[in-house]
Amino acid sequence: MTKLKPMKPVDRAPLLHVSAQESLRVFIVDNGLKASDPLPPESALAVQLGISRNSMREAIKALESVGVLETRRGVGVFVKEFSFQPLLDNLAYGLQDSLRDVDELRDIRRVLEVGLIERTVALITDDDIAALREVTERMRVKAMRDESFAEEDQSFHQLLFRCQNNRMLSGLLEIFWVAFYKASGLADLGNPSPLDTWRDHQSIVEAVAARDVAGARLRLDAHYRGIQDLVAINREREAAADESAASPKNRKN
Image (cartoon, rainbow, N blue to C red; front, side, top):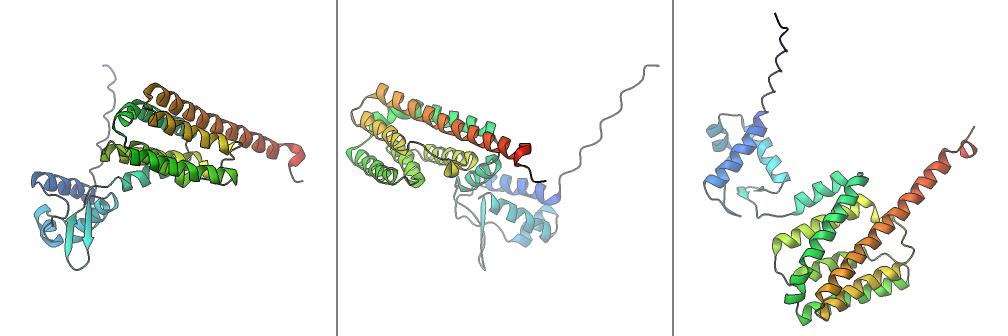
């Protein structure tokens, strides 16, 4: 008789509070609940699902942590207005030590911005351009002092696409900017030429102001190549420092 392959073990049933989370999501969708709409009391929800109040409380807390629900003390549980912030926080945290994902994040940012810059050129207003120039001037001042201008950099990329009035796009730009910034440790990277970084941003603004789609794409792409080079330089420095520290000459007896 041919030897039979063993059966695969039965997957463990999900914990009650995990199942309750999914039931709450379905409840919200099925009833068309929107931001600020109240849910039934915690005790009533627990009775409907046939679980303990503790399990229901854990499910609600879990959905609060990802921005689906909010508890108003003494009032009740409500559907929360959608926000990218929980996704932003979790993504940035999860990617902070992954060098491969840093490269992937940079590529996603580059493709997203280069691909959508044509629409910005078509829609951008004089006020938007003035705001971009004001931000790049703050960059210049800080670059002259050899100071970091991460806050200005973040504002720049948001302002560049503000005219598109696309909340989803703004959220994605924020997610990928912060995730990349944290994952790459960009705050700690030495920038040998901060004025060149400022010039990158200034050239993007001026290409957009001139309604030069091809030029704006070219300058955005060059900006991301500069970021790639900066990360690569600092990786080499870190590798050299690690190698030096591991050298027998530098080891303590």
